[in-house]
Length: 379
Figure 1 (cartoon, rainbow, N blue to C red):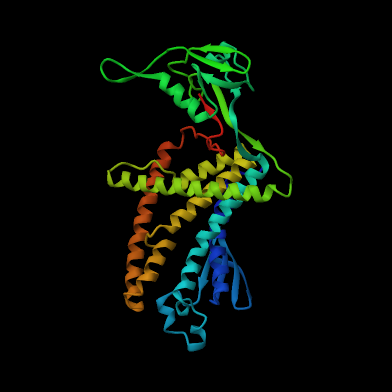
Figure 2: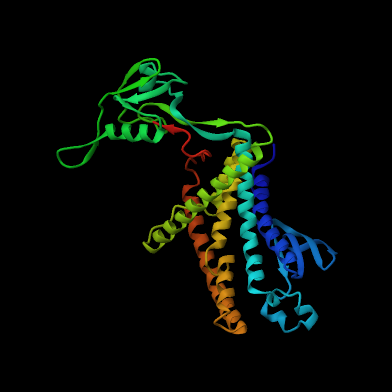
C-alpha cells in the first residue's frame, strides 16, 4: 500500500504541474522562449537543454515552474533586438493574456477529466420520473413500517410525488409547524406513504441519529445509465464539464462568503494546506474513485483561485497587463512588483489563519463528498 503522504505529494504536484504545463504550452505556441521548465522546485538536481529550453528535475518534488524570457523587468534591458523578439514582454497583450490564462485552463481541463472518469465508471445520471427507496436503515420508522429497498414511492399524505426535491419539501413541511409563541417547532405527526405495493404509516423521529434522517430512508429519483462504449466518453465529458462548472460557481460563492466572514471578524471555515493534506489522505483511503473526484475538485478550486484579480495570482497579472494601456509599461511593472509583494504577504497571512483553523478541526470527523449531488437524499 502506498503511504498517504506519497499520495498527497503526487496529487498536489500533479495540480501544480498541470498548471505550469498550461503556461509552458501556451508560451511555446505564442513564440515565447521558455528558458526553463522544471519539475519540482530548486535547487536543481538534473537538467538537460533541448532546443532553447532547459528541462530540469529539482530537489523539492512539489509541482513545477516555468521561466519565460523577458518576464522580469531587470532582464529586459539586457536583451538585444533578436532576443527581445522571443521575449514575453514583446508579444501582444492577447498572446500574453492567453499564456497567463493557460494555467487556469489546464486545471479546468484536469477537473473535467477527473469528473469524466467518474461518470464513465459510475454511469450517466438520468431522471427516472419516480422515487425509489435505495436503502432502509435498521431500527428506523421506515423499517418498522415495513418499507423495503426498491419500493417506489407514489405519494406522501395523498399528494403525488415523482421528484426527490418535492418529496423532501412536503416532508419538511409536515415536520415543522408554528407554535403559539411564533417559534417553529418539530412535530411528531404521522405521515402516510403510498408505494406501488401498499400504504405505510410512519412517525418521524424527533432526534434521529446523525446522517440517518427522521424516516431512515435513502431515496433517489435518478439512475446511473450506461450507454454503448463509443457513446460513454462523449457523454461523460459533457456531464464532467457541467460538473466542473457547478463546482466553479460553488467555489466562487464560497470565496465571497469567506471574505465576507473575514471582514466581519469571523474565522473562515475553509481548508488550508494541512486540511487539504488531511482530506486528500482520507479520499485515498476510501478508494481510487474518491481520490480521482477529490483531485478534480482541488483542480477546479486552484483554477478559480488563480482567476481572482488578486496580486501575485494569474488573475492579478491579467489586471496589470491590461492596465498597461493607461500606464506606461515600466512604471506599471514597478507598481505591480510592489503590489504583488503586499499581495503575497496577505496571502501568506491568510494561509496562516486557515492553517490555524485546520489544526483546530484536525481531529473532527470528515464528511465524505458525495459525487452525484442530488442523487441520494437521506430522510
